[in-house]
Image (cartoon, rainbow, N blue to C red; front, side, top):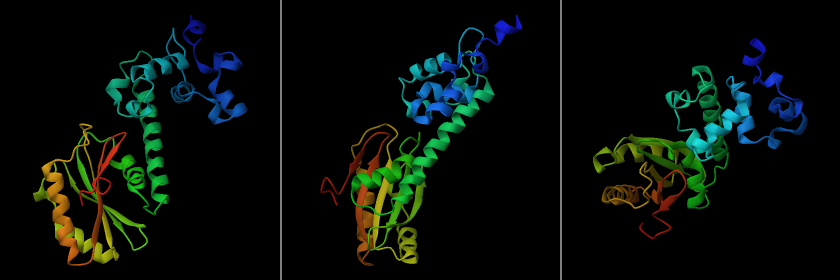
Length: 232
């Protein structure tokens, strides 16, 4: 009975089906997403291998790793064979991947277009369930000096402290600002508040020769640029 119970543990699979050995022999890129997740969870259930279970979990989010990263412990433990410890392993691994992407974006410090702003900020705010408003400070070579979260939650003009924005710009020696916030709803249409904030900060910076170069509305997969649409 014990043998039956453990028959779907990775160590009991045929060698060709073992994702750990496959990674050692063929390299990490040879593994499917399901095989990588199977390594994280180690085993499935009595009647299902870790790879089969991983495929089922991925199918529930239409094979989208970003969507998988949105699942919490309670979502994952609904799958038979996934307990709290395995759910935590999956969540931790996906969070590391998200942070790695953010660090890679930070290394590309020079901003050359609206798409480079999207690459910088999407890992930080693109998948959040709430709105956040950020300022990216640039030097005269359009290199990122710092990113500052200005507000969290709903976006209204009252939440924007122009003095704080400009004080930080002066301290950093910044000559340009890029505004960025996310729309959890997925809509890319700027609201009246979005437009008002842009004009408020643009006007405040002009007296100090600090330019607002762009304002991006960011969603999980796309963005809207005020500069690209000539709205600045």
